[in-house]
Structures are given as structure tokens and as C-alpha cells.
Image 1 (cartoon, rainbow, N blue to C red):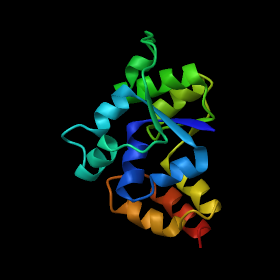
Image 2 (tube, rainbow, N blue to C red):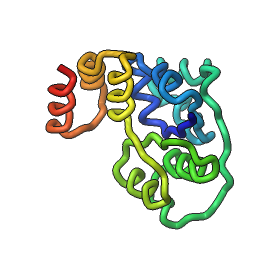
Image 3 (cartoon, rainbow, N blue to C red):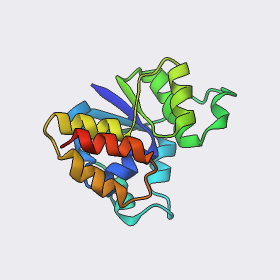
Image 4 (cartoon, rainbow, N blue to C red):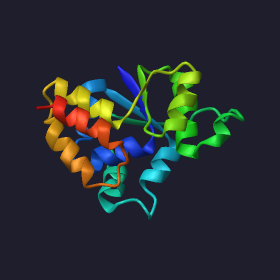
Length: 157
């Protein structure tokens, strides 16, 4: 199984110490070069930069074809390249958190999951505690509706 990821899901999973669940759940994670650039940017948290510089074997950095799609110009370059890469390699999922990017990916026929979907799947597989991961996620700048977070927290009990 293969997935394509954007920057923010990888960043949050790294920050809460659960990036490894990606390989356990999906095998290979492909990212475009723009995502790697964002993961290694000076403004990125040091632990994320360190992870990206010493990337695991299950991470595959690929460059999508440079296709002009005016609809995709509405989103950031990492999201745009992730969608283009996913359209090329047809992964099982694309991992995106941004609402606009998720909608555009779905319009392009891609199956979308987000950080919370990854965490929920990992918990269902017994790879981690969902309630602990959600608590850790709250300590980052991850944005989620309080209702959804409460629902997932209650479900994990």
C-alpha cells in the first residue's frame, strides 16, 4: 500500500512521536520535493527538520510532473504537488488536513484522509493510544473543531 502526504500531517505526526505508524499502516509514504523543502525549512520545528534530514527508508521523495492546473493554484505548493503526485502514482490515500486542499483532491478523484484519520486507524490497529495521541496533538498548534476532538476522545475510551 502507498500513500502520498502533505507537510502538515507529517509534521504533526513527527511532533507527537507517531510518524512511524505511517509505515506500519501504509508501507510506503511518497512526498513531493516541495513537501521535503517545507519539512526542512528554517521555520520548521527542529525535531521535524532532523527527521526530514534523516528520513526513514519508507519515505519516498518524488517529483510530480509540472502540470498547470489553475484550480490547484488556490492552495499552497506542498499541497498542490502532493495532489499532482497522487494523480500520477494513484496511491491508496492522500493525507491532507487543509479543507480546501481536501476538497480539491476529492474533485480530482483521490481518496483523502487526514492526521486524525491516520491516528484513528493506528489506534484501531493497536499501534498506539488514541486518547494519548490526541492529548499530545492538543499541545501543538493543530487546528480541529472542539466537537470533533471530543467525539474522538470519547470514542477512544
